[in-house]
Image (cartoon, rainbow, N blue to C red; front, side, top):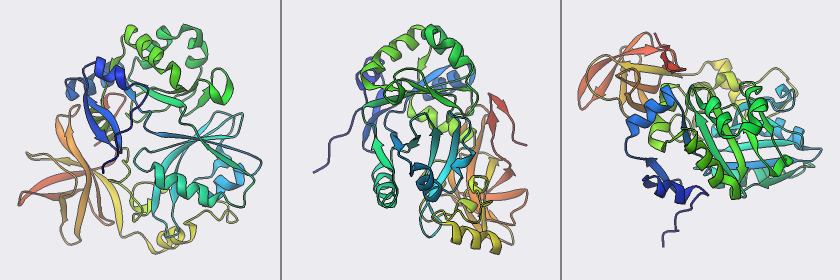
Amino acid sequence: MTAPLLTTPFHALHIEAGAKMVPFAGWDMPIHYGSQLKEHEIVRQDAGMFDVSHMTVVDLTGEGARDYLRHLIANDIDKLAPVGKALYAGMLNEAGGVIDDLIVYLTDWGYRVVVNAGTRDKDLAWMRRQIEGYAATLTERPDLAMLAVQGPTAIDRFCAAQPAMAERVRALSVFQGLPFNNGADGWFIARTGYTGEDGLEIILPAAEAAGLWRDLLAAGVQPTGLGARDTLRLEAGMNLYGHDMDDNVSPLEAGMGWTLDLKDPARDFIGRKPVEALKAAGPKLKQVGLVLEGRGVLREGMTVLVDGLGEGVITSGTFSPTLKQSIAIARVPAATGATVAVDIRGQRVPARVVKMPFVRNGKKVCE
């Protein structure tokens, strides 16, 4: 028997706003509110809000929390200073594959970790297994909701909706998150996102979620669904777990090499040895961006043909509303040069290899 879909504290508001709801990672979530394209453009030009309450918030406390996280993730949380700084990291398995990518914040009470919705169960099981022997406590926070407000006017519109918080919100640095009332149980606002635009991610008590949504609506922030979130993150060159990386893919072959901190030889994080061995040998694959030169749309799973080197695969692909071209993230042979071909329904269609992101702050940046 199929389990019923979970719902977020914003669910009734999505219905009220005319959302088309779809199953996503066990949740009933909005894919769009009438036009995915318009919602994409709103975030690039103004401000949109995304319900991301299906993601999992975990708080880590105790004197052993630092040592635990230094072992658990491949980036080094000792970079987290001052309080409020955020760190993007991969959580690896013993073979060096990516269990998940996540964000860690240093807080007054310990650490706050945000993990993906689709990997919640395995992430929590893994984290709980690894915490044994450490003087640390892991607390999942299902009592909290999470809303992302993204776009060039996102901070201005949020401050208009919440004037009492405006001064502190405007003072936030990029990749910084701080509590705004009641410590770990109150509002936590971070200047982070998944769109390539400036903006905020707000974690707050579920009971206060509807009020924030209505205040933001009144301030001119438009509801935005998961469809636009995907095209926005792809334009921004950001990985999606289960597509661009997974348990069988090394971070060195998924564009995540910059998240590996190998400076401290004494820090024995999970997956370190196979990662170091692959780095020494030289990865056979690398992650690149592709821009289609001909007609068609690049889709996940399409074969990338590299003359003289073999084949790669598209891990995420779409038609870019901003660039008016098809773009993709692909994993290809490490020696791949400036051009490839993509097999689209049996036809070799040329594509250009580019450095990501494709779009940042509403402007084309790939060349």
